[in-house]
Amino acid sequence: MGVAVIGIAVVVILWGNRSSHLELQGKILKVRTLSLEPNATILAIDFRVTNTAKYPYMIRDAEVRMDTADGKTLDAATIARGDTDRLFEYYKILGPKYNQTLIQRDEIPPHKTEDRMLAVRIPASPEDVDKRKGLHLKLDEADGAVSEIAEQR
Image (cartoon, rainbow, N blue to C red; front, top):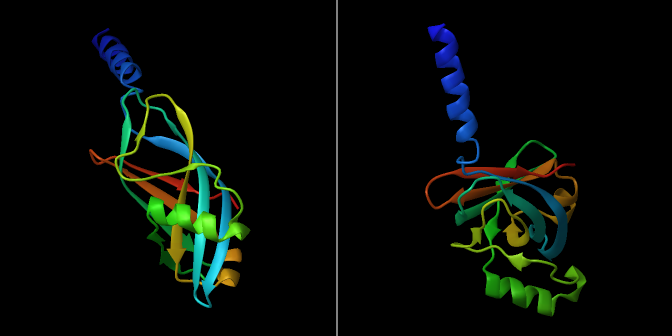
């Protein structure tokens, strides 16, 4: 009888705290590329995130990694919002800027879904980017939570 009561208490506690865990769920919607040099490519990554918690998710940092076709992992350098705006103004080949650029201290409200974008520079040729195995977008929350969104290829 005591084991049943403890079991029920554990289930109730876990069920009650299910939306307290800070985590973003999402997917990468579109990746656009712009070749700058033979071994440098700009990626404009549009993605959708959902904050499943009952607390806001404040962005502390965003990182992008690319898995290449030959098994290497390359880290990308994030481009600032102002520079991203200028990229889209100057390089019309990128197309329209659909979503607001994600920056530090941006908040994803509780139980909300938002579309955002991130521009990065990756040390790879456009051909290597096209042959990639996938992209990984890692979003760090101000209090230490980490969420990762992987590209579905």
